[in-house]
Length: 254
Image (tube, rainbow, N blue to C red):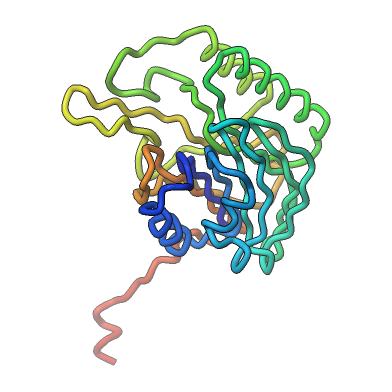
């Protein structure tokens, strides 16, 4: 089972539509969470062509910013909307291919510190209510957890970043180390002006270690946005994520 999170930084630019569709076709995720659509749900569904291939839930924008959405393959995954707010949405997800059922939280980290405090507190209360269930928290968090999450520019830990660390620790969130790169956002500048940060993540909450599954996270190199998409692959325990092909020269002589 494959999840994908992608801050698309707007869906309205015509030159980006084909790139995104090709990205979805290449990765072939079963569940995709997108952030910062900057459009209404009907417009996003039309542009991405989700009616033909996907089922979807969207959180409409307020003004010209934010906008969240979750898309899934209805033939492989069952999704039920639980709640949605301006900066996050939660769904109940069940896979028809592996033994997995749990909650999925799609996050867009706001710019204002006051909104961030409120967002982390809301998710904390929700996690307390669904404590026995496996939960995946994914999306654009708009904060770093350590100095190693940023390269270039000024590296410092402010009060809201410390609160974000407290949110992760107090809820016993576990982050899977990603392959393919340490950073998910770039300012696209060259030389000494280049800044990269790790702002998009996957967190696994609480009882995940009881699930008979193995997982792998990867930062993908396809993007028309300043953010790179990140994928999470779930497999049944005992089934390798990469099946090696082995051959001995002597076999070819027989």
